[in-house]
Length: 287
Image (tube, rainbow, N blue to C red):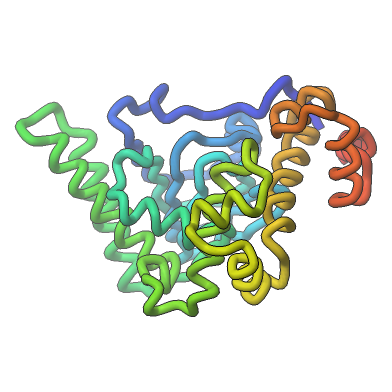
């Protein structure tokens, strides 16, 4: 495994200042193509539609197979890489969160926390493909009156349909979920946003306007784990990313994650992962 001083972040602004990039994939993606992309994070959302072929996605130490008639969303900050070596047909849409309506963005944050490909019906697949095709067409045109408005409207339609198709309850409110499930989704979304700076369970309870016992009971009922577990889970996941993909030392990683005492961070990591940070990094180097 080749390590770097940091995990590369691919910035959409560098490629598409307008906040959206659409590509149609109709070729053989070789190992060299995917090697160039490498392991990285994005500062934007990636929406994938696979019509034909097979893709393997590595997202945060898990491998997800993407099959024909599947869709997938990768959220900002998730460390990932692609592996595909067969002829592919499909669409790849990179989108800045600013291009999305607030309700759709909130739905993505709260409901699509765990990555997972989704099989969709032929009718839904064709609708998504058609919107992506029209969006691509207008994005490639020479500048015309109201072009930005047209692109924004099409992008909103695409991401709204994609999100509602990706998760059956993506746009559902509390009336369509158990109360505990709704609370848990709100909590998990907050943790992914604030885990670096906020480690106190009571702080999350305050942000959500619930008592800590009520929040703990709800989260444990849905997931089987406590509020403290999920805060530590997100923190240690980021620690593993940094140990695996960067050459930052343990003290630097501890500081990045909000721990002033590297020894305390090491004890927490050992308790969570079953190895010290250096043992984990040493094991990573042989894979």
